[in-house]
Image 1 (cartoon, rainbow, N blue to C red):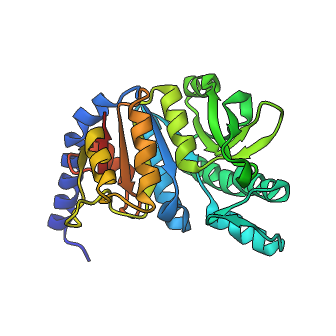
Image 2 (image 1 turned 90 degrees about the vertical axis):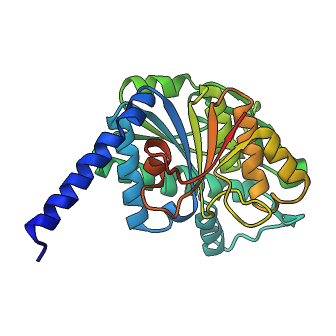
Length: 287
């Protein structure tokens, strides 16, 4: 059984933590924070519950959070279940009409509503959308060889501002509309960056399953400028799957987003650590 003295120490530590967070709470009051959800936080019910609680807390203290999610593993599982064969070009899946139907069903349906329900269970007011709703994201075709894969072209974030006014939390599936009524699949990081730029968000957080951007010695670099990212990419220090994330970050900070952080989503309460403590939880990229 825990002694009363130990309990008092725990409560005092909790109070001190809340007190030390005050400057950050004041700093982000009214701020727009776009969070790309993927990886570990989507992998288990416990991780989803923790993430949803953190997002509801952000809204409770005056932050306007926007969630943009992926869902690649769920899409792959459904394609396998339906026995839909995929063609690949240079390692990338071709999104034909049949595949696109599955992508939209999984992202806008199963994955999106799971996140919305998790937020609502924690007392928030989550609202599920895709980029097709209210002309949020209009796309052009990224590469004809890849089929219905889109690149954000025109953005209309007005629906998100209306939701902020009602204290609601937008949860967005990375699906966009084409100029002729087509439906396009969008890379989740790319969609999050485009939405953050359109909102001129204070922060863009890319949750992932790595600890951050590492230097040549393998150590995580907690703060980088755009020029640092360019140099590390040119010299091969930033490589592989980290390149699309840093490209998204660079595009965002050059288009009105104050800062982008590649966050280690495996860390419990990573979003709160990044926003409300000195410690942080990843690599921050500034203009």
